[in-house]
Structure formats: C-alpha cells, structure tokens
Image 1: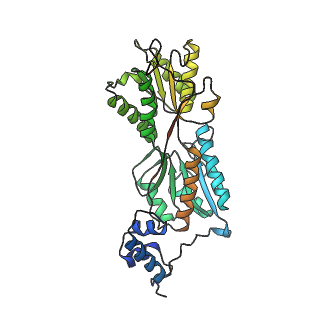
Image 2: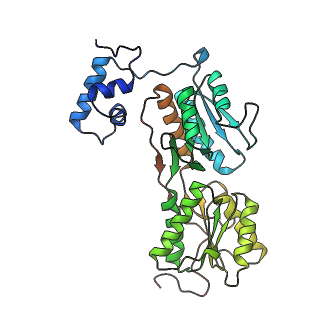
Image 3: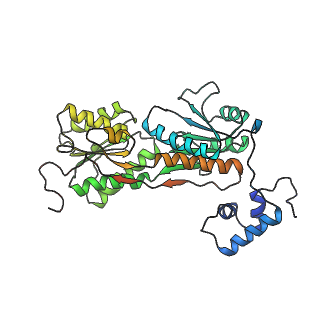
Length: 350
C-alpha cells in the first residue's frame, strides 16, 4: 500500500494524488452527483492507493461531544432548532452540550473568541454550532488554528465563506409572503423588518422589495419599520405603521414573534384580522397556530436546520479537510386565517 509519507493520509493528499481540487475530492467522498464518472474513478483509486480512511477524531476520554451555542434560548425559533439538533445527535450517539451566551459573554469570555473556543476544545468538543451569531474571518482562523470546526445556523452576518452556514431560502420566502398579499389585492403593504444588521431579516426584506417590483408597486420606505425580533418590538412597529396618514392594509412581519405583536396592536385598535388588516409572518413556530387568528406564515424548516447542522458538524469533526459550503433549506407559504382581500375589494378572480 502506498502512503502519503507524512503520517495520517488526509483528503488533501487524495486530491493531490488524483490531481483534482479539494472540493472535488470532498464531493466524491460524499457521493455528490455533480462529478464526472472519470473524475470519481480517479479520486476513488487515489484514495485506495493511499489508504485514505475518514477517521473520527476522538476527544479526551473517548467521548463524542458537540456544542451548540445560542444567544437566546427563550424563543420558539431557538427551541425548534434545538429540537432538530438534539434528535440528530441522539441518533448518532453523540453528546450534545447546550449553552447560552449573552453579548457580555460567560466565564470563558465572549462566545466564539479564541479563548472560548480553546476552552471548548480542552473539554473534548469536536465541533461548535453557533445559532444566529455574527461570524467573520477571525472565527474561521480560530477554527483552523485550534482544530474545532465552527458551523453557523442563520448567521447574523458573515464575511468568510470557509465556514459552513445553514439557513433557509429567506429571500424567496419574503418574496412569496409579499406575493401572496399582492395576489389578494393589497397594494399598501407594511413590513416589520427586524434588525437592520441581520442577514436573514435583510434577505426577507429584499424578497419583499422584489415582489413589489415585479407587481409594479412602488417601494415606499415609510412602510418599513426595523426592530429587534421581540414581541414588544412587533407591537411598537405596528403602532408606527398604523399611525401613518395612509396606513397599510396588510403587514408582513419577518418573524412569528413580531407578528404576534402586530396582532395585539390590531386588537387594541379594534382592527379585525383579516377583515381590516391582513398579517403574514415568517418561521411557522408553534405560536403561529396558537394565535387567534392562526397566522398565515412562511415556514422555514427549523428542526431540519438543526438536524443538518449536526450532520455537517459530525462530518467535519471526522475529517476537517472536508469541503465546507453553505446549505439552504426550502421555505413554504402556509396559508391560514390571518390574510384576506383588503376591505371593500372583491375576492380575487370574482
């Protein structure tokens, strides 16, 4: 058997022997379909010649540990992601540790800092999954230097494509939500747009703008209200929108928690939903069906996002040389009770 001559054979060794890129070698080893048969054969032969085996890294004590870190674990969004992650880790026989880090950090410092990541590695953590955190080139560098992969679910922002990100099709979801309201006949559509520095929120707002453009409806910045993702933020944003001289007939809220705040504001003003005001949300957490009326919403597969994060974390912990690329899961519009044609208009198609 031929060896690479420097200890354990890595996927990079296989790629060099087969004269392909590391990304292509990773696709072959992960049975991806978008590789030519001749290339697949060449990579397989190189792996066999070198004796390449994807080995799982063993943390201290032989335990298999992953760490998932949230900035907040009180929201339905976070609980859905956690549910998918816990189930996937359990099926794989891995210990999933859960931690919550606020902005001021914890005992080991700021989450994802070098010190924090080193402390995680010292505890035998094989990979870290960060939910709705901000990541950049520094975190990618810490990950490489310490040898602990970092994956990010719905990153607030990221400037480094070498980190694995897992998210939903936010732009398409925002476009679909707005398109639904446009099809019902609404033309003045407000949007409770979430934080301006949030990548998912910005993508949903861009989808909103795209739907308006395609329908020939001018974009009015007065109809956009940015906020955090909390219930009270949704209430305040709805108050501002409904106080406009020409208030919207429909509101798209980029998160279920915001939409609940919108519903509460409408109720306080005796605006019946959907008779006087239509509301579309995003997420489809449990509160979307617990609300009255039940929310029309864009479903993002939150549990599946947690599951995919675990699966990719296991793959990277087994072989850090695997090619990292973003994952986007499909969104779907779920029509319930909170949307209808604007008051005084005819039903679509009537």
